[in-house]
Image 1 (spheres, helix red, strand yellow):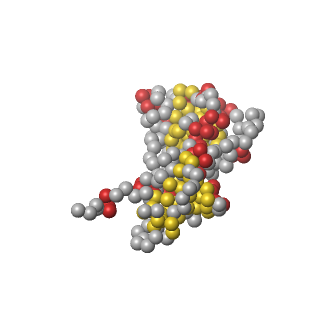
Image 2 (cartoon, one colour; image 1 turned 60 degrees about the vertical axis):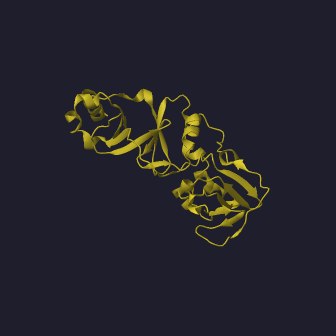
Image 3 (cartoon, rainbow, N blue to C red; image 1 turned 120 degrees about the vertical axis):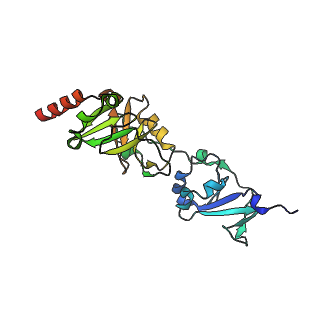
Length: 247
């Protein structure tokens, strides 16, 4: 009996103009993928079936994905091959061929956004919220109504006219939620464009893990020293209110 083609493992190849190399940052942490250079073209192989259908692949302009059959390249669902696959290419793991590097750091100025072009994008995975940023004037009546057992699990600090709360479970208050990753606090529903950038940024700007890096959707960041966080309580909140009235 002939083998059922639907049960065969598909082997993929992809090509991309070399001038568009930057778009590969979205997949450079896929360590199963390999890359090769052929004059003005980049070739990739090793994709799983799931990766071939992923949003990261579909969003890339000028990225052409093929199925490899007997040395011939077929576009998706095509019955006739487009071309023959080049041989004798020198393949390298994509995460080694496309390293992320940082310029020399100015130790007197944090300024992540001026040294590394950091972009956040909507993520496809859900993460539990670990932090909440609320406007003080909108929660001043709600804090005293919170049960003590919830407050004792929370740390907090004040940032201008806002309060940042950290702890799980979070308080039931209006505000903007964040999730934690490698010492970063990222807006709920967002992640770094380059997923492995989080650990590199931590090594560069938070090596001692003595701060939280609070990110906005536009890629800017505010460092929050952990020593500035204090246990949450109704009395500490009221004291903060009084202090702000005196300023």
